[in-house]
View (spheres, rainbow, N blue to C red):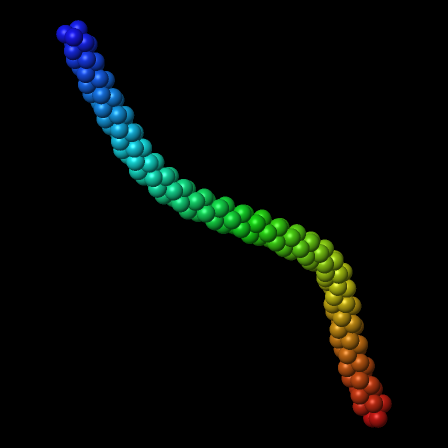
Length: 158
């Protein structure tokens, strides 16, 4: 009967140890899940902070992209204006160059006509001078002839 009491005592001890081990295992498992839950919460909060930070960085990048696109549009507009201005002034330059060439040609023609007119004026002046000279000679001759006629009339009337 002593053996059976010992056996029962051993069983009780073993059961108590098993129960303590089981309780400890349940407690440890509970702590494991609590720690796991706590770490999951911490990880989620950290992930939310990172997502917030990434969203903020993304918004900043979007603003920079919009500025860059605006700058690109402005640059394209400036380039097109400059290109159009160059084309406009090139066309204007070509137009005025052709006008200058035409005017130079006209000037050459006018100078040629002016030279011919100058020659004609010079010839007419020579003719005019000759005519004046002849007129003076005729006038003198006429005056001389009138004097002779008067003298002849004066002498012939005596």
